[in-house]
Image 1 (tube, rainbow, N blue to C red):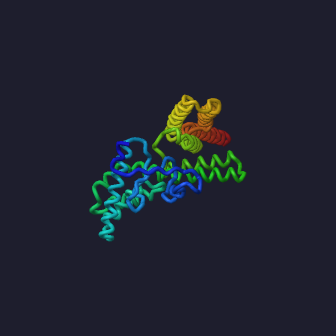
Image 2 (image 1 turned 120 degrees about the horizontal axis):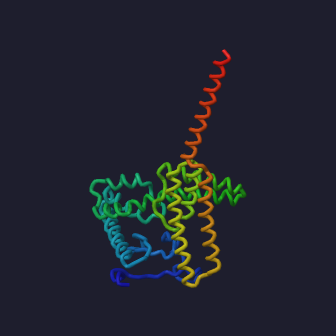
Image 3 (image 1 turned 90 degrees about the vertical axis):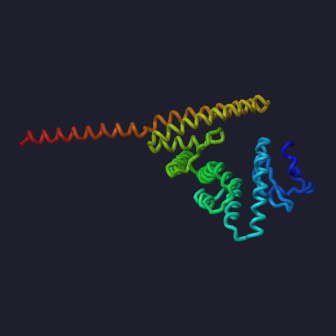
Length: 287
């Protein structure tokens, strides 16, 4: 509440009751999660949105809202101001659910005369934008797999195809650096995809991240239990995730990583040469 002295607070409750006030506001303002917090100008136009995780987050978002408001006023006074237009697009991208490609944003950040405050915010949030863009492409592979399974496809075949696509994206530089319990499924798919392709290094790194994500998952579940949530259900879920990690460790070992394949190929080549040499000696003796 300390941070609220510079603006007017308004709480909109999604009651799903037609007679309740402003029931359509959530959708109109672009909400996609709870709690959804926005700053609006006096005309009701959204300036920025954010997650109210702390007083610092509120103050930072308020600073962004004031910056957006000032840039919009600049553009109203001079619609041809390219630096202001670029700055507005960059600020909007920082809170967009699916931001534009990072190359396009980098080009906007190089616009001559760009506001230094916008440049600083973009530099600070650039890696998060890269992750968000990568996540959008990665989610396509997961959605495609879900749809295929829903349509009655072979589960193992669909998962193998999904894992291969996640690994293909990884090789293109489209991957996630953030490691938390929400990334469990991603690192499970990448580990299997990399192991299947014989990429030892990628499989080992991904497996290490999977184990970190699993530890985060277990801590999150323990916190739910501590708050009195459904202990039995959460206990079963925890065992399920533990079993998944163990299964992936076993499968990764059975899939013959590239180093083992290389050694196997060398042995096969050595046998072939030995057989060829023996055949040549036999042929010489016959003469």
